[in-house]
Image (cartoon, rainbow, N blue to C red):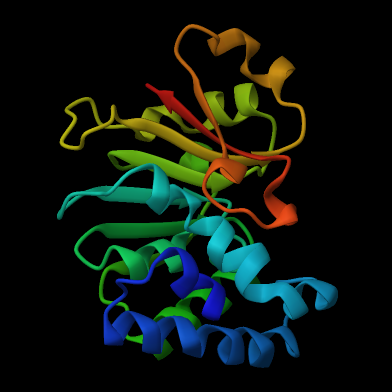
Length: 206
């Protein structure tokens, strides 16, 4: 939890309380439904929460922004972002029912009124959103094909509507089809822990 305050010292008391409650909630659910690898729980705030909040270092969502987290798994990056941006609206989508069960339970426990968990495949889902967020569920070209129908045309934020994708390693082949449009930021520019050395945030306007 201290690592969040290192980079986000202006969290409200409610946000601190919600973030502090996350590990206990996930530890409890992880003992019933394995949504986070056991070894990762030791670095829960670094590997999952702070990594998700890299998006909050890149941009600030204005009130009313609609965001969909595709392939949310246990709720990352969607739940940390929904705590951080309580006036934005988050839809957390996954095709696996047990993962959505965990997302709903965690959201309810934290009383996140701006968060909606839905079981569906992205190809079959309908709706219009300012941004799609995700943590590397597949390669980027396939992800774009499966999700671009969900992006609204009219921008309301400082950056263009589109995909905000958290990915590690060499992504040059994946971004090649979008080379004139894509923006890649090294997360290590913001966070100095070694975990982030190869981690990137991709912004693909659509």
